[in-house]
Image (tube, rainbow, N blue to C red; front, top):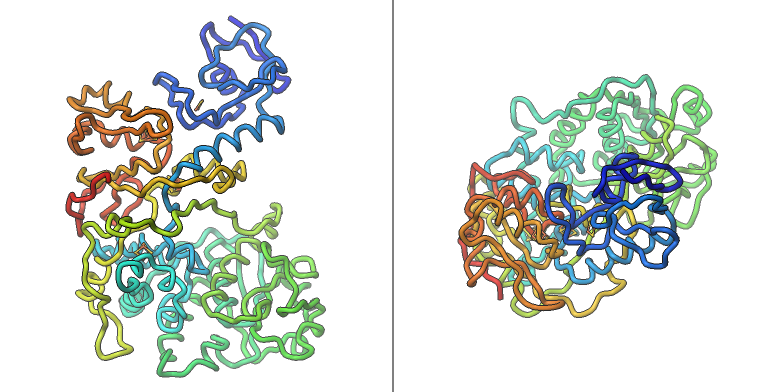
Length: 542
Ligand code: SF4
Ligand code: SF4
Ligand code: SF4
Ligand code: FES
C-alpha cells in the first residue's frame, strides 16, 4: 500500500491505484476528459497532467500508478499551463458552435434554437420559459427589437434568415393572451430591498430577475406610468399600450412595487434610497444635464460610468445599466443589462464577490466552407421565410410551425455538460492558439435519437469500448491514421447500424458534444421520445 504526497498532503492508496485515484481520496479535483472509471485509460487528452518528483515531464494522472514516496504537484502554474495547452490543442481541431450564431448575436443571449425546437414540438409552455429566462419583456421585444439575431442567422447563407423575432412574439403573445400567463417561481424572500430608479426596459428587467431571486424591489419613476421610453416614446401602432401594460403587470405580479411621479434628485435623494434600501439600480435612460451629479454619480463618455462587467458605479451598492450607461440605446440591450445587473446585485447582497454574470466559453465554426451549408440544410424545410398577413401581424400556429421548420439548429446539443467547454472556460483556453486549417463540418443524423459530429470528437475511444462491451454487432472503431484518425462504424455503415443498443450509454460517456441526443422534442440532453419534425436520414460524412 504505497503512500504518496499530492500538493503537500499525504495519502495511502491500494496497490495499483493511480494518481487520479489518490487525488480523489484527498478530495483534490483533477480535470479528466478521455478517462471514465471502469474503462481502460487511453491517456489521449493529457488534460489530467500532473508533475511528479520535480521531473520536467508531466504525466497523465489517470494512467500513472501511484508509487511509494511519489511527490505530486497538481495545482502549480506549470501544471495549469500544460492543461491549458492540452485543451487548446483539442480545440485547434474542433468544429462546432457551442451556441448558435443567432444566440451569440442576441444581446440577451436568448437560447433561440431551443425555443424553436420547443415551438416545433408544440411545447409552448417550455418555449415561453426559455424566452423569459433571458428576455423579461418578450411580447414587447417581439415588436420593437432591431433583430441582431436575424442578421447573424446562418440560414442567410442559404436564403433568408429564420424569422426569430416573430417566433418569439408568437410564443409571448399566446402566453399573454392565456388565462394563466407564465409566472416563474420566486425564491423565498431574502429580506433585502432594492430600489430601482427608472421603470424602462432595464429597470423592469432588473426587477423581474431580482424578484425571482428573492429580492424585494421598488421601482421609482418620474412619470405616472411604468414603461419609460416604451410607454412614452414608441408609437402605439408599433407597441400597443395594453400589451405593454399587460407585460409590465407580470413583473408587478412577482411582487415588484412601483412609485410613479417620483424624481430621484428632487422628490427623493440618492441618500434616502441608500439609507432605506440595501442596493440601488439606476436605469433612467438618456441622461439629462445634472441627472448624474444630483445622484452623486460619476459620468464617462457614454453616460454614467460603470464597471462593464459588474454594472457597479462609483458609489458602493449603487449599480447602473441600460440607456443611462450607453451611447446606443437599444431596448434589447437594456433588458439584457437589467438581467445581468440583477446577477451582480444578487452577488453584492449575498456577500459574494461581485464579478457579474459568468463569462461563457464558446467555440465558433465561423465562415462556412463550400458545401457546408448543404450539410446544415439537410432535412430542413427549404421554403422562403413565412410572412404573416396583414403586414405587422403575428404568426398563426401553422405559420409558426412552418417557420420553425426552417431553423438548421446550429447549436451544440451538449453545451451544459460538455467537459471541453467547461474546462476551456475554467483554464481560459484560447481556441485560436494552435488553429490551422479546420476540417469540414459533418453531421450524422441517421440514428433516431442521437447525432454524431466527428468534428467535436477528441478520440477518447470511450464509445468504442462501450459499444464493444455491449456486444454491438458492428460497433465503432478508429479509422484513418495520425492526425486524421476518426471514430466511425466499420465498413462505412451508419451510426444507427453501429449503435443499436449502446447509443444512450455512449452519449452519456462522450465528454463532448460529438455524440449527443437530438433533443428534437424540445428538450436538451435526454433521449427524445415525443417528436415533432424528425429530419430525414440524409446527412453523411463527406
Ligand atoms: S462539443 Fe463542447 S466545445 Fe464543442 S461545440 Fe459542443 S459544447 Fe462547444
Ligand atoms: S438557422 Fe436556427 S440555429 Fe441557426 S442561426 Fe438561424 S435561427 Fe439560429
Ligand atoms: S465520439 Fe467517442 S471517441 Fe469521440 S469524444 Fe465521444 S466518446 Fe470519445
Ligand atoms: S489523459 Fe487522463 S483524462 Fe485524458
